Amino acid sequence: MSSKNYIKIKNLSKSFEDVEVLKNINLEIEKGEFFSLLGPSGCGKTTLLRILAGFEYPSNGQVYFDEADVTSLPPNMRPSNMVFQNYAIFPHINVQRNIEFGLRKEGLSNEEMKHRVQDALKMVQLEGYEDRYSNQLSGGQRQRIALARALVKQPKVLLLDEPLGALDKKLREEMQIELRNLQKSLGITFIFVTHDQEEAMTMSDRIAVMDEGNILQVSPPKEIYHSPKNKFVSEFIGNINIFKTNILKASPEELLIDIEGLGKEKVQNKFDISQSDMIYSAVRPEEITITKEKNSSEHNLYKCIIKNISFYGESTYFYVQPINSEKIIMISNYNDEYSLKENDTCFISFEKKNIKIIKD
Amino acid sequence: MYKKNNTLFIYCIFYFAFLYIPVLLLPIFSFNDSFHMVFPLKGFTFDWYVQMWNKSRLHQALFNSIKVGVIASVVSTFIAIFAAKAFTRYKVKFHSLSYGAILLPFIIPEIIIAVALIVIWTSLGLKLGLIPVTISHILFCTPFCMLILISRMEGFDKSLEEASMDLGENSFWTFWRVTFPLLLPGIIASLLLAFVISFDEFILAFFLSSSDQTLPIYMWSQLRFPKKFPHILALGAIIIIVTSLIVMTAYWLRNLGQGKKKDFTIGI
Image (cartoon, rainbow over all chains, first blue to last red; front, side):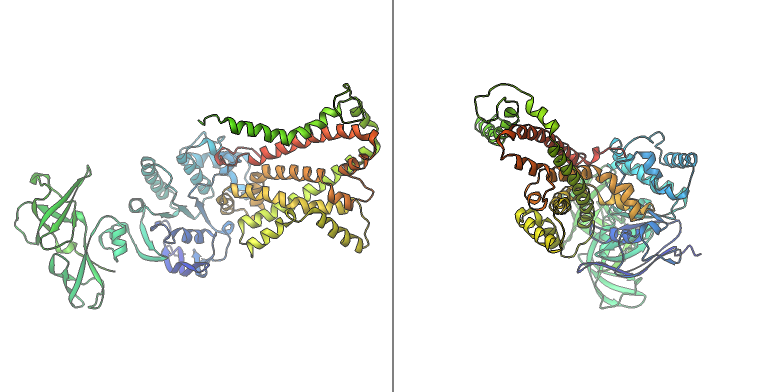
């Protein structure tokens, strides 16, 4: 058994009527990984999860669990369990019976059954809630019961469909940490669907960024953040300044480019970019420093006018405009000693290695 | 808060008066000590109610009606459960066409269904009686049952059934462990309503029942004899009360847990 490609999705596509919602998806997920499917609504992430669960069947392609082809298996025959977006707690039975629901066929004695339910409730910190009904639980509690009900089956893969979407911010952040810890201690593969990029960043081992039925990039959070492969990924994850860029000269090692509003620059050619490609240059707001005076400078320095300053508590965002350009640049790396004000002139700089060359 | 609107209030009074005064005359005259249904009232009596105890043909008709009603309501509810499941959970080919086709008995005049059935039944060489009446009532009740069950089915979340599948149950067990208990108030409402519809039905029974009278046919047959008229009033009064109770129960059950989905806690 290989742990490298525990779940394998091969050339998978799915159409509803005439609309292709998943386009030739290829994906491998490791055993014990916390894997997130991230993308805006309508990108196909939930459909992909439902195909993994067995609620939808792909139009083309295969799904393998542990090297077994499960493409046409119904949900009840798969070693996966799901936590639904709306939790789907059965309203006609209490918490105890909800959690027992999936254990019917295991032929446990009453005693063992009780024990298993107790363990599951302990895991989600809801001991003593056995007799409650769904309508007597808060959103967060329902979410935990749904989790317990899925985990009591000891699945190999847990599928989570935006399980934190309905919770308020504070509870959501608590649950993020709790889920992550639970996943680590159980060692179960989690496949987590979300549209919240922060959520995906804080919890995942790897993230697949999806848009319009395509997987655009599969990488660990840091890599997604620091070397996004294309414009969509770079804009979807965090804030970023994107500059239109012309390629003046392209060689396999190096690119000579002309960045909108900033001028010529020589950068490494990391992604095999050729002269005919459409590219952008991008810099994260925190990678740009802003100063009042023209400091000693080994790297690029641009004179700008401050258009707007927004204070966010933990950070301050500057929106500046380079002289001779319409482009507004966002900056969050700021040292308070300069006491800059709107309409002041300032100098911005960033290191060459922080320039990300991305394809359209 | 709404302001009181007197015009609407008066309209309401007239509306209810128009609906119920004729019906309320029945119970009033059923206690009247006279063969004739005319004011002024003559005196108070229980005679007409007592008379019903020794009319064996009435008992037979009542028994027939119950028999037909129970079978018709059970069978049409049974059919409607599957139809409702199909229409709400699966992609049905020619969805609106087949939906319309099933609801058609609503619109077709009963007399046409009755004539059609009598032609088929007799051309098959079969004897008229309670069996064709029951069949026609199943046909007639099924659309009602379907409407009740479809609305109930739409009222609860599809992901509950998916969760059951996900937890290892196949479609049969998912139906028994999740769909059926959640559908149960609707099923009971459907049974009660279908029973009442069958119990009250006249035209189909009139054409198809031959000598096996159902209760409405019995009542109709008694109307010709003035002396037997008052005990029909008494019978009518009882039927009004019992059917209203059944319909109210059905309506209450149908809405139980709907709208406020979260408050659904019937334990099965």
